[in-house]
Length: 412
Image (cartoon, rainbow, N blue to C red; front, side):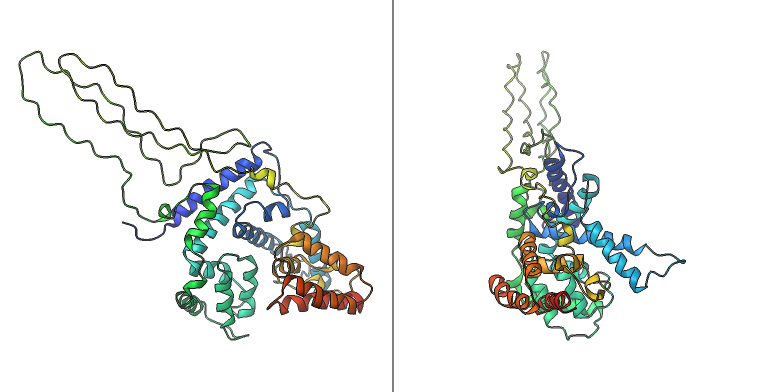
């Protein structure tokens, strides 16, 4: 009987799909690597790509936090500014190989499935996490990594009193009630499952903790006793092969050459025992034909769709944002170029919140701003042309940061 969703099955599916996608991308090129734009477009499920970026940034931030020494002052303003510049430069050299990328991808797939099955768990893990405080302003930073059910999380944070610290357990309990009161804001599970089903077959029923054992092989029924008779006796039937066990909920696709779709091979049906015949055994009946595997969903292999962009295109440095420390744009008294002054953290916020996640459109807008002769013209371009083009609503925080950078460029 179905009772609840299984985290173990989500993890199992995440590992299998991550392996399949990595086979398609790295199969013909085992030493290939991914840069920032390739990570953000690796799968057609945007939430998966965002969770990969979030994990990458969290690991990167943890590594940077280890740069401490009892012999030097890492809190000095010049040191912090130099570290920010270093992170900006390093972010333009993102290079991830399969061994490092595949675990991040598997976890992101698992987290995406969790987000559609249990938004409260996603709220606790992805928004609460371990912030400096549980004030709404800090929690809002995690919204940039959410795509599935984003309005549900955003509307809840808008109900919290600004600047007021909250208890973690209270926040989780309140969010659960908010979710139950707004079911229309929760994306249907089937819609998310269908996105994954295109990549690797998946049904909602396969994610349950327990399932009706309808597919298990039937137990062999004991044959009725045959009365003892004088010789010659009826010969016993030939031994039958063991029934092929049913496959697990998510069967790993059989290995195939690179660039070809992977098909899932269904288990061969169990054979019924052949009846005994006397006195001459009947000719052996032909075995039931094995169903041919159905082809995997057609589509262009991911590695063809995920070619890295030219070096002139913005990299992950244009996309990552984390306001855990003061940035170069907040410290430097004057900037010569907006492109160089906007930190990794701010870039991801601008791209995701103002430019609908489009790297190239962000890049073109910033380049145009850098060519304008004065602050007033640049501000009008932002508040009139860009605001109308992208229909900015409730984006005041990000617009204000961009206008502040423009002031520092032109007015010092």
